[in-house]
Image (cartoon, rainbow, N blue to C red; front, side):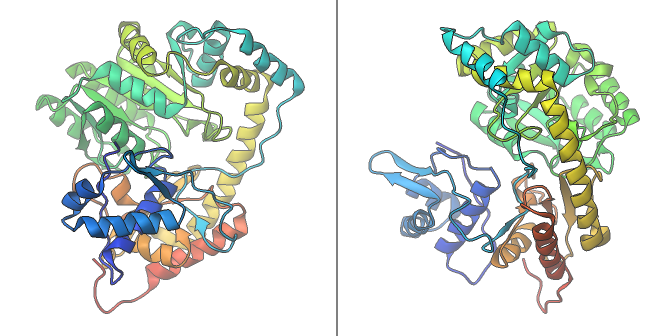
Length: 443
């Protein structure tokens, strides 16, 4: 069962409708995935301090919107949301971290090679030699293919990294706001995430050292390039300093590089400075297309047995057919051409966002998502809810906050809107909400 404890915005709307609204937001933001089982009526009522009847009304409202489905004796589950069900003018999505560019159809030769994998009775655990070599090329930095594991996407790679480095009840250190999928993976494995302070350059080395001295945790999860959600790219000196702290205190680093493909020039990865204590993870879902559920994990030799064990316990092996297509696209230049298009598109969209939203938006100009700091009269959830009423979807800082300290900010994903014109329309709406004067603070 999914651990879902929603924060309900203060609003004159009935509680059941607010629950349905937050549920819809979290589904569209990817916090809740299709097939996830929601808390029982009684459990959610106890969490929120309301009656089970109100939860029943909320789930019924969510079912009416096509968000969930219930089965007697089994529970309530998240449905796959059909984005074509509503008219194009119904909403503009600035919550989903996706880059909208056309994907070229695979060649017949690529399909034939992929089809040949059907003759394989079972996969090969960490992946075939060819697939691991493609993963090493994608990871860059001279990674040895023998240390690469092919996974079912970056989220799966993250789950393996957590499982290989920490046991239930232990703590993983991370940025004070982090990828919401890391929160879900930690919860599934019974791990605790502890926030470490960040600044405009990323994770603060002095703060990490304090946590290490306090023995808060022996594993650090971080996103140095195009950090999710703030969009910050960590400079080389900061990476070196963090690697030095990790070496001094015997910390293991998990480096998530899911959006690094958008950086034509980037500082060296953390693994360059701490190769014996860094697990690197990445994938192709954002770089190519969401349906390409292929990821890659590179680990030090000492950690590979535990990674392989977690792989065997979770899926045995990644789907060879999709891995074969991915390897072909990496080798024949399809991936490189698609990345060039996405870099150009994100640069255009990022410039539009900065022009419209002004000085309160921050992040690398090559990032697919930006961090918008809000006026004091707004909380993150209240601002997100107001934008939703005006048919714009944003991702509240509450989805990314580790602990109770939720910044007054929202993540603005500039890539998901189908066109630049629709993006600009949505950004104008966000800017107008930000500029509005209100008599009483919205809390």
